Image (tube, rainbow, N blue to C red):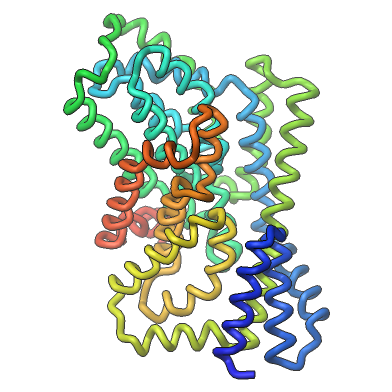
Length: 434
């Protein structure tokens, strides 16, 4: 059977399995086994078992369940309430006022969570009722939450960057460092848009709150200290060279448990719930990685990635044209799959053509996460949309319309990182060398 026929059969089979509702991991494994069976004479069962073991037997992946557990612990703590109270006094005089607490709260929580859905849910359950009660525009309150919640994918420690690093055998610490400036840039774009919107729509803003004395603002800021200590403990230990990402994840769990105990939210039920949900999520991601590994090996046997890379090279596309095509591809793909599935499913196939185009693999990881962030707020399978639907009761299409301006801010961020690659590469090059 020729290469084109095998590609079509495997692609159609994978789409049918996903459309039928089969687990993503099992669909990937089945498609991989089918490709091996059709194209090469090696025993599919032996290939699958050795590949699955090799994919999950990775020390780097140890950080994954730890960071997920940390996020689950913090989700059940008073962290969001404390952050909102600590940030609110400092943003009241900015155009947009407490809408910025939404954005900054997501950015800070992203630095201790690593999950877009957890960031959106944790900040949203605190900020949305407060903003709507104070008379803030509902579209901006929900839209800013949907957009800012995606920062959990980019600002380290990012679960999806760990997955990308494991799938492409890149340094997770370097990926974490590369995500800092793009993450802050995206938060700044959200804040900038909110300022412009507030100045252009003064009539849709609630009356200004009474001015708070400076000393009282300083006193309120004390509620930010626990989360800042957590950020410094986790991220600072990595950037300072004191701990690997895996060791920093363990530090994060210990500090999260301590913070939860100190605030009185740690008990048997919250501990068990956090551990159970973290285990469930970790197993899901590991299974997806295992399935993707089987499909990757199968593709290697068939030669499809090499052929695809050569096809792209023969088209003589410029790097900008290639990235434009890939951006459209990932946004459309993100309408039907979650971010982690997109990364593990496409990384091994896309990487040869990326390298052939002369693009840096670390930079491409940040670009890919930015584009996947966009898919978190695109229907019908935008995970942040589902989270906000659960918080507000609005249908997904309405939430997607509310978040559309922030989708455009993400698109601007993608353009900026393409035009100025050093936004992602300067910090890891400075801190870790070439």
